[in-house]
Length: 146
Image 1 (cartoon, rainbow, N blue to C red):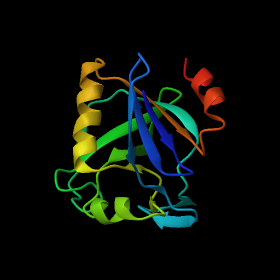
Image 2 (cartoon, helix red, strand yellow):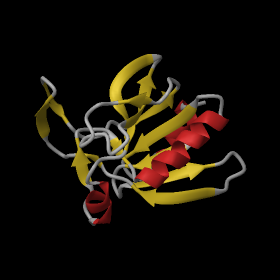
Image 3 (cartoon, helix red, strand yellow):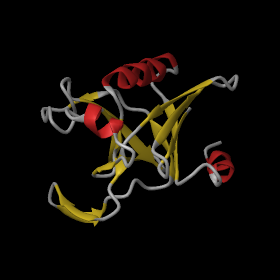
Image 4 (cartoon, one colour):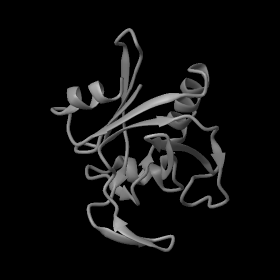
């Protein structure tokens, strides 16, 4: 399972046995944006998601990093525009204290993206993802994902 704390912008890749690793992430900007023909609040939504479609390769190598890798998130069995991906400037983004930089997606380092993809593959092309503003309410979010 991948847990994303959108308050502190920390990700946790958690194994069923309780072993985990944590890493910095960048999540959605705390404002309304105009992006790809849409106007919306760019905060990353608090939800229980499922990644269940193969990694997509996007042509935009700024937004999606040098390899264009994008793991799409689904909510209630519907594909969403949200996902997990690196960014060309993820080194700068992830080094900051405040990491609210994306248009709503979860930005990770290239190395972490490779680890997430490997986990996704080992789990039969499925990964549970929970986004929560702080860890306090996480227990309720976890209950929703099962």
